[in-house]
Amino acid sequence: MPTDRFAVLTDAAIDVLADLGMRGLTHRAVDGRAGLPLGTTSAYFRTRKALIEAVVRRIADLDRADLEANRIPGAADAPPVVLDDIGEVAAGIAAVLDHWMSAARNRTLARYACLLEATHHLQLRTILAHGDPSRAQARAMLAAAGARDPERDGEHLVACIDGLLFNRLAGAGSRGAPAPGSAENRADLAGAVATLLRAFTAPPAGRPAAPAAR
Image 1 (cartoon, rainbow, N blue to C red):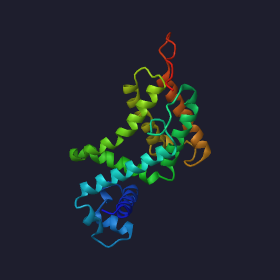
Image 2 (cartoon, rainbow, N blue to C red):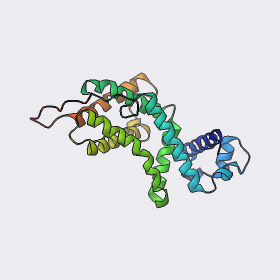
Image 3 (cartoon, rainbow, N blue to C red):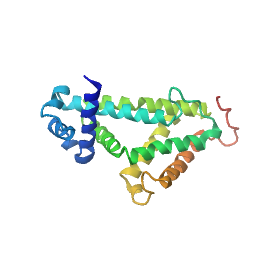
Image 4 (cartoon, one colour):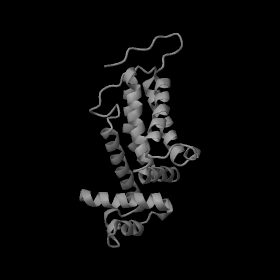
């Protein structure tokens, strides 16, 4: 399958999901959004399951590119984080979250739609594996920062950040938070993420902090 056609179709499907939800995702709707002849999408993705899996793969690829562009710790070429870097790390994560709330808002809404669909159709549960790199990055970051239990804490950190993103985009947090895409929003997100990072890397009471990996 040509890469450009894959991108065109899956990007169109992402927009359909964001605008119409999972019920609106049909091969015909994707053809129309992509401006391609009827039958094009079904020629590439014979079933709805195949189309959804392709969308998830596209979302995962784009999300990974965003993380790498902002040098989020844990990426292949990123340096290990140290405790003194928490503010900088938080700012980088906040920049990605803000992007996912603004310019990439449709992609984020499509991601949630796919995850919810997977709760109803067990054959789609394999799409959850696309989040493994983010969890691995979080574990590596916290291990380098001296976290007490980076395996467990990495999972919890990702869950907290996912919850922050959902709350700001679709939950009650969207009512009073700064506008997505603004410097105020990035600063507010950075403060929240920094609080999380400090909590997950703080030593137990009475025990000195573990030396940070370098």
